[in-house]
Image 1 (cartoon, rainbow, N blue to C red):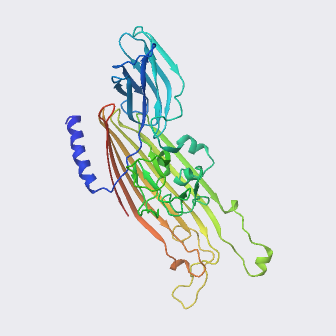
Image 2: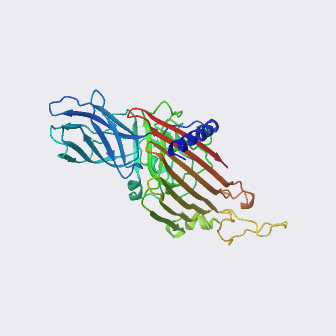
Image 3: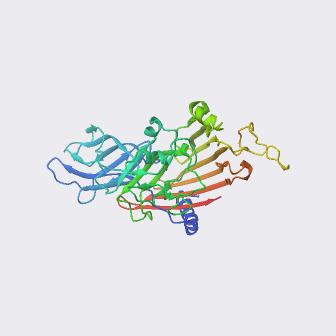
Length: 426
């Protein structure tokens, strides 16, 4: 079966899925745009402009300048690019080191000199860090920055921590907290934010931010937080955060990551005065953990790739005066003070995630991503001495499922077609 027929069948299947999918916001694509002129300042139509990068599945994206010498290369993945300008009768002009981040359109202009095609003028250096093509304001956290900063994980709240004007969020002890979309999280007093994964909303309830599904940080390539100039496609009242996931490539890669701490790095506020009044224990975090393994590579070189992640994370915490009854079935309550802290103890809040992504280049201009994530989680335990541990209310998710499919096709240098569908269950 030809690639065109396969793409057509994929379009039909995706269209059926989109009829059942909730409303989604398109992911802000990166791009390169500019104007090509000759040395006298005259615009040059018909110039072939090629953007090449290992981040591109097809390796090279090609457009042609219009009658005003303008070009626009859309739907580019974050990465480092080389832009080459070619026109008969002129020297080849090449710009190297163009770094694109998510949602950023780099302006790359060219002044071409009369000469032969065998001569090449190469200019090295990054493009301007100011995006003159868009009006939105955003905060970008790249994977390199997230790996370097002294934060526990690539959690969405990490981006908020480094964004002036945001209040109401913290992830200090590894514990479950209100999501970015929650009413307690505000940007300059405005709530109603949204969190998206690959351009699709993740919260269950608008304005509340509760979500049984937790984003797996091991699949994060970049996180982009928009605070103004947000597209009309977005139904959020406040800021919008989009998580850009990783994809497989033609090179096999493997990564393991582990974070752990125990109770020895936490102090308490018990004093002799409190002990004299009968207070013998305080709340204690017994451990925080985050472990993940990821692997990616080609299934079929230049055509089909995979990226898989297995991750477990959470924390264990003891609350003063909260115990299981060791003598259940009797009229007596005996605090079980030495019960082991494990997943059945109620002291342990945890999430397990097994995620797989497939990227398929159906044709040079058609790319499809499939994502499937299966999670087990428990937000467990009592925090009040008035409630025994076995009587405490807990959230159990066994399991959560996320299925996403995206299709992107740059039809021309001015038209980008995108379709997205998502199904989530718990």
